[in-house]
Length: 398
Image 1 (tube, rainbow, N blue to C red):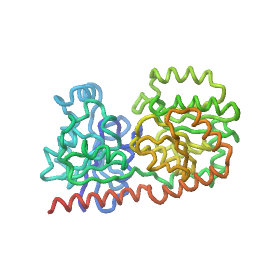
Image 2: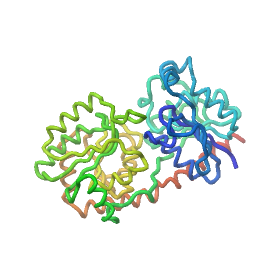
Image 3: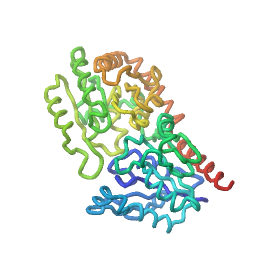
Image 4: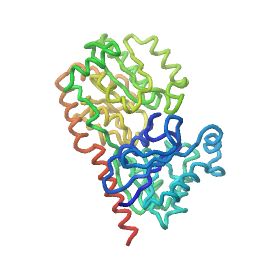
């Protein structure tokens, strides 16, 4: 059986105990491969061993704490500490294929070092603009990888002639969702009632948001919209699930936006619940708090894992048309899409409409759950990825 090295960014550990969509992707597909033996390479964490086996995957974690992280983040080109350790692990484990996530410069380095012997795939879960400035190749730099994968058609088309320049093959590999871990709000009312009671919720109409509490996620737009909703639905509740950052001791870091948000929440005419950061393993319970899910992103999202998770929980969704979001939130099928991303009045109208129409909520929610059970399970994503690996390796033999 051939071996593939799944190489994560240096920011968060795998599995994603500190958060991170790319890290979650790596963990979930590695556990479901049937035709490839996975080697997972990521950054170390005090709560995880340096080396271990989880299911079919061998995990190798690179220490990058304290001064090492500081030096790498600020002077990567002179002190490529993570890159060197990744290369050493590759030399030791001898994989047949390298799959690099969200790190084009690392993919470039490995392609130059190993590309003739070991094909390299670069997989982007967001756009060039989302990368840190020290992680961006110079515009027009071809990255000679065997394959380029993107989390959505939107990302693929934006990056095909940029980060995908120089790739032999291009493919969309969607993110997935562990549908069996999510309980539909329409099927398990006792469990849902129990979770809601833990947050002091009864039968109040409830809007749930999940994600980083940042301006780019549209949290301030949602709060403005809820101020209008409370004029006609004073019992409605807004639940904000998430922190300001990912990472150890950073999930509730006080940012300027968070400071202003706290002031605004103190003046809000309705009830708002802040849950703080919730680990990925506990997120299925968080979605049971809501009657609808609202994600008013103000940026061009690559895809948006939270939308797949909300759909898996049977929640109808209200979202913007930014980036790859319309590929998973289909207007009038499993949710409602806003015409303008920053229009709080339009958002308030859609929230009020959905909260007042139980039949529509159920139809949209059930159609969304069926969609993810058919098209976005991790098992399907793992099979799609293994097919892509097969294509890459077949071209190598030609």
